[in-house]
Structure formats: structure tokens, C-alpha cells
Image: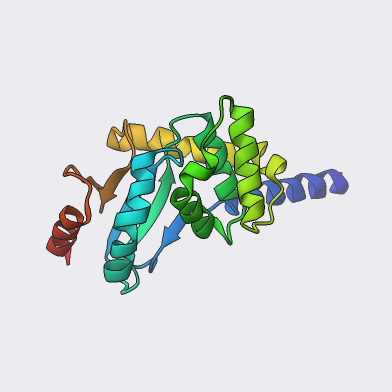
Amino acid sequence: MKKIFIILFLSFVFMNNSLAEINRIISGNRDAKITIIAYESLTCSHCADFHKNVYPLLKNEYIDTGIVKIEFRHFPLDAAALNASKIVQCDQNESLEMMNILYKNQSSWVKGSSIEEVNNNLKNFIKKRGFKINFEKCIENKEIEDFVLNDRIEGAKNFKINATPTIIINNKKFEKSLNYKNLKKSLEKLI
């Protein structure tokens, strides 16, 4: 009886620890006064534009100074985005860096006439960039998949999200055109 109890206990601990390892991708001071949640899809060209043209300015002026933290949440629009999200979540130590590289080089890997072809491009891109992950294991990880899909479900349910990128600032949906000027105006009102 003791063996069964120990096995069940260890199984419970292992399951909870494996779930605890999946964390949100956050940039900035976790205790910042302002929290931005960005719902994105890794195959969305507008999301890639946000990472190339808005996020660096936001990072320089507000995130690196400790005023704002940004939490990236998944809202995959297709199977390729779902798989890319699973890859990004797979190595928690490099998630933010990998996500930024995927957005900045989106046209290099988001191509192909089938999901298998896109996955192969993604796998080769990740490998060339020196990320050391087990691609197949990450793609097949059901816990990571559930984590990613739950982001999408919660975004649609809590904020009525139907497009990417969608920005939430301190739990209020940002309704203006998403550019740095408009974002800055909204942030300055909260400081």
C-alpha cells in the first residue's frame, strides 16, 4: 500500500511540476505598474510588424525602464502558428529570444504548400539559429499545446479577441490603431 501511495504521490508531483514549467513569455519587470498583454499569432504579418517597429521602441522607453511589462500570449490563427507557438514555449530559457527571431525572420520560415513543409522550414530555421530543442518532441507535447490553445480560448472569452495583434493594457482592450504614437499616448495617461 505504501508503494502505491508513493507512486501516486510522485506522479502527482511530476505532473504538477511539468505543468509549472510552462510559463508565459514576459519582457520587463514583473512588478511594473503597467501590464500589456499582447495576443499574437506567429504567422501574422501585422504581429511581425509590431515586433520589428513598435516593440523595440516600447522596450527602450517603457520596458527597460521598469514602467511596463509585456506578456505575450498565443492566439494562433493556423496550424503553422500553433506549431511555432509550441516550439517557442518548449525552451523557457530562450522563449522570448526565439519568438522575436521568428517574427523578425517570418518570411524565412512561413512558407510552403503544406503544414509538413512549413514545419520543415521552421525546424531548419530553428536549427540554423542554434536553438537546441527536440523539434518533434515539442510539436507533440500535449501540455504545451493545451497551454497555447488555452491562451486563445481565454483571449476570445475574456477580451472578445478575433484578430492579431490585440493589445490589452491593464486589462482594457486597446482600441486605437496599433502604432507606437497611439500606444505611447495611452501609456503616458497611466503613468
